[in-house]
Length: 115
Image (cartoon, rainbow, N blue to C red; front, side, top):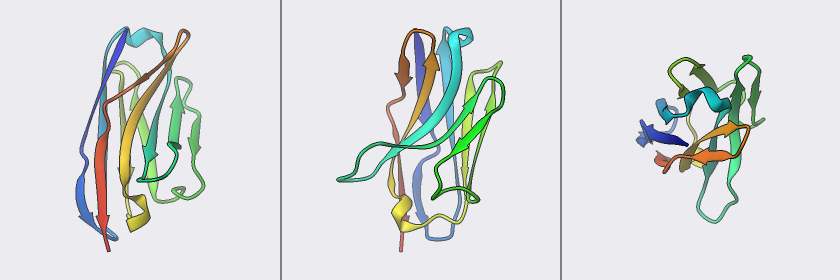
């Protein structure tokens, strides 16, 4: 079992920055990749960025160049540095971990970007 806890969300003005953190506990060695997803009001949950154990990175096109995902594999911690935030980035951001058996999700952290 893997438990994920996000932190770092909040209210920020357009153009500002936030850094989200996700701490994993439990069967950390079972994790093969970690990712950030987000879900805006009235929208489907979407992938923001993903990092694998081997260091491969995937970014959603709309955040490429503004957001950076990083991970400490040994600690099971993943970060999302968000710069140049836009109002359309407003969403609940969820941490995701992929194992050989299933996906795990955090409780989410709210990011609100004011105009």
